[in-house]
Image 1 (cartoon, one colour):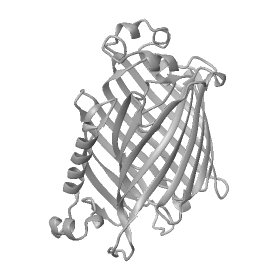
Image 2 (image 1 turned 30 degrees about the horizontal axis):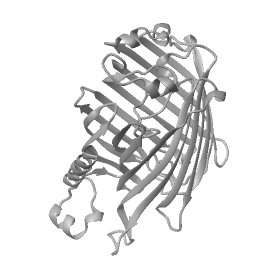
Image 3 (image 1 turned 135 degrees about the horizontal axis):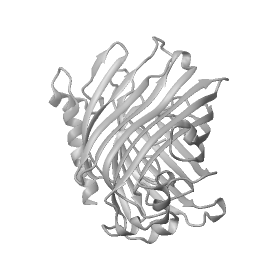
Image 4 (image 1 turned 45 degrees about the horizontal axis):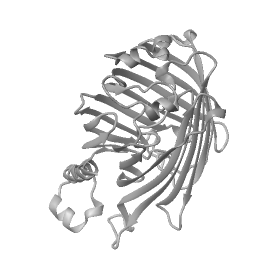
Length: 389
């Protein structure tokens, strides 16, 4: 709890100190608190909003990161949604170095979308082994789970609209993991011996989506159904041979008024046909799902999880400069569960998950999020841009 309170307090200080425009910051705080904006550099439809903020996660411990949110339009079209590229660079108290950039880009008439990410991590990490039981019973420590991981990934999806809400596209996934300073238990792990400690994967896949969301980065209404099949093969330049099938269902419902949203997601990931390396098994935890669990603590060939989240943005008592009552601040609460298993039939143990979060709107429907995730035996505080789904 001390970590949570300290992190939230320090984050609030960083957020307030980052807000700046020509007129007095103190007057804005006193007179118009929820109309504050981050410092921004703007030209035509292009904007950059920088930030510096702390966070605490099970993977990195205390992390100080700096970055920004880039928003722009590829064409001068009032109906075209804003494209966004949030990015960050961070260094933590346990020696972790991380770089991450996510892109959601809408091209002319929203008939083409490019969605993806680049990330690089050089960090102390933990490996519990493969299977639910290992993640549930093996204690974290220098002689049981600790090792050093160097990891980078380039992941991109190029989607083409074929009907009103139907997209079909190409998926490219290139990643590499190197493991060093492994603990004795990991050195003798059969999956590590089979997969090796320097693993390079190259995958090409196809994706089919039904997407009726009103806004990809922060939907208020609509639903999203996605199926992605990716094949990893030596033929594509990698060193591995296996397949992955991902199924994703998301639904968004406005509750009484806009900016009060009930959202839920069910996602599954299955690996098959070949020898999936231990680095690319299906995993729970981290920023993307089951917030509060250390990413990779639970890993196996197959994964499923579901999350239900309520998102609430406050209303102002007086009109803002845009002549509406929308506040820039809000909160979320969520509950979820998930598991990993070697086969579909063996999904018998389910993990609890829940949490709360704060939201600050930087640009219309573009939020910075601070989430406190509660997990079995651990928790985490996450600070980043955009909603988790």
